[in-house]
Image (tube, rainbow over all chains, first blue to last red):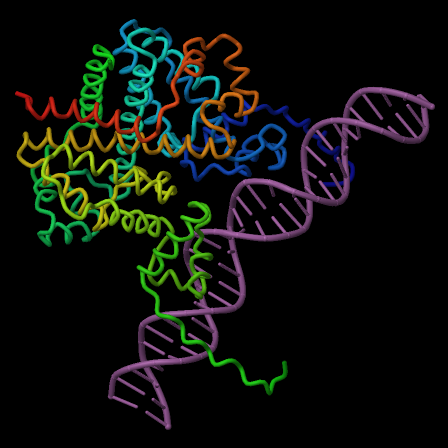
Length: 230
Length: 230
DNA sequence: TAATAGTTAAATACGGTATATCGCTATGAG
DNA sequence: CTCATAGCGATATACCGTATTTAACTATTA
């Protein structure tokens, strides 16, 4: 390197926008989980200084909100099937699938009200499908009940999945795995019903359990939609 | 201060144990939310150096797990009512009440499998109440479905509560509140069903909605328990 | 064309975090 | 009374989010 070497022309900074920032954050989260998302790393991935992000985003929480809303584009189905039940079922399954693709979503699901445009579009489509089937309050209760179910179910599924991955064992052997701790607990005899459940319970496909529980809840909703409160 | 000053006799360190650590952490979380819990602050509250905690706890996550398990003592009811439906309902409501007392629990609910002794005791009591009502798999599905519901519902309730608190407005005025953002969105006309819902929806007591949705789910479960699958 | 104002990026700084490592010290055993 | 040891605290490392300052470049005006 001598003084005659022409210095690199300074690379014009690539213009940034929220989309690119959110995409980078999602990529990071897909690779290493939510905790791998730091403003510094997001910025680095975009060849920018950390502080540059603050021109487009005012806080890290806001970035998370944007990530969640972005994933909602994967949840909103291309075309809506007509039946209300199918709409609710599809929404639940698509949310689940999106969460399996982006596990970090489980950590954010239900944690904050989702008010982004894509999330609103999902809500809109859902409400539209139920419009007029019963009085508004009943419809809202129906949507919220189903949402509560699949939100909770998805979170639990991911939690279990991570636990299995951490111990490297299937749920069947899970008792032996999670340290002698649980084994010891069960061996105390203080938890006979639980012990029986762990011992005799069939290991069922996660998707199947999800679908079954969902169908139960949908049955319940159907009954209430049919007979709106007096 | 000179070298001749007799140094304070070192105060014998108060002996520590997990219970005291967890209690201090819960106190901090109750006051300032989960994010206010740092190992340093927990230690400070116990007049100890931060590193001292690592003799009793191996990671911060573990501390969170212990906190969650501790709160489960508030969830396990003193005496069990006999009816399975009452048992499930009570568990849901007690979980909700515990979360209202310790809002940070909402951030942890369903995030990790709960394997502590108190949580296991809660599970045990629940399973015991449903034992024999149907084949084991159906019983497990029932418990998991109800748990998924109330987990999701509680999380949403707390999320909304925080949002209201942040804007200082009731849900009724919430649209106007959360910045012009949502208002603008609704004004675009792209979300007619949602707009109608926001406009015409009755503002209902949170506990009432929770109870209603819960009853729906319990109805569904009752139907399945009555007719176990072939 | 020169100078200046305004905008934008970068560097630096601050106060915090979890946790690994390691030297000291006080306690109890012999 | 000495010595081994366990437990504690200080220190060190490597991050973090974000405020503030500085530098660089652009565009405008004289």
